[in-house]
Length: 472
Image (tube, rainbow, N blue to C red):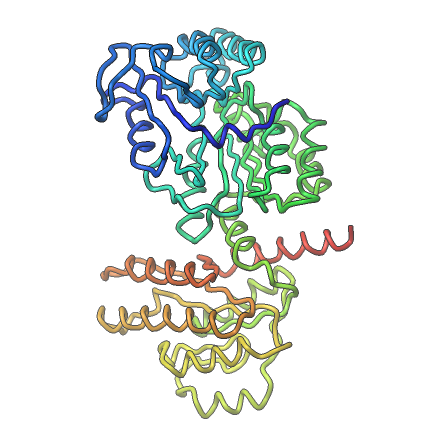
């Protein structure tokens, strides 16, 4: 089978079904607003101008070469479009259109089988149907205008278009960037095994995140997953692990989900990291991207308040981490430095909320993070719902001080450091503060989690992966 690399590097794109006000125009507008340097064409049955581009009545009417086609035409028109792609020497075609095997109808299944047969016979690689297709930051090709165009080292393959959009946006918000990504839908031609094999060989990808609902090649999937996980970090979210979820998966992408016990054994034996929600997937991508250097299970937690410190201790202990006590010399220094207030804890966790993220907070945090041999990971906790006595202006000042302190500490220590940022709704414009912290930390190479338990679970899974890798 030829390499799929050309799928992610088209030089010209055509959107078929790009009529004004329809889904095709949304695809077209997204490509036009991205940094794609190649040629973009619009095809619709009326040859109507759309988004400032001339419209062509047929793909075959476009002068010159077309590498990649996005199909938003009705399902019955798709087989002929595959034939047109073959005549036009198109490399790949993504079928956004639904109404195939996932519909459960005989006609839908027949259409999908015909598209699959035509793809194999013609050599045109068909992605989907019922998918969003390619997101390739390196060439500026995106099907949503807010997808980042900076290239990273994480590959993403996702059977669901909606989950794909969520994962890209949520991970990007927290600083994760992608090498290449694909929404592949019903997988009538390009399937999960093809994509896993591609990412195994792709030198631009160090880790791969996968959302899948089922497979059509169990033995091949087992082999390629094992090969990929032996070389790169692999995170898998298996949709439809419950009987009810499996029935929903069948109606979504026509996938046969299979026994969850079989999937669990397959993923465990392959060495992939299994997660159970979109949020856990994003937490893992944050961990892989920003905490590759964490080596052990000794943790220091700073900030957050007394009650939060108690819960943080439980969260890390639940996942097998220890919180070693502070040295007595440091405890004595803290007693003379930290204001004495109700509920303060001068241990590990260390409640520094009385310092209100001042220079004292920065100096003590920096000292703790930099202490060689004390812990393997330092976690600074800020709860944006804690400011119940602050004014809006002083709250904003504290947010700025916390962000700046984290950036300075990250630059100073060089040791594994994470931020847990929990927030609740207030009467203030707290969202700007959240975004300021997130952007600043991501730019400084700091992972940000939205719960202490989520951070502990993700780091635990990462360490388990490393421990299994070391055992061979």
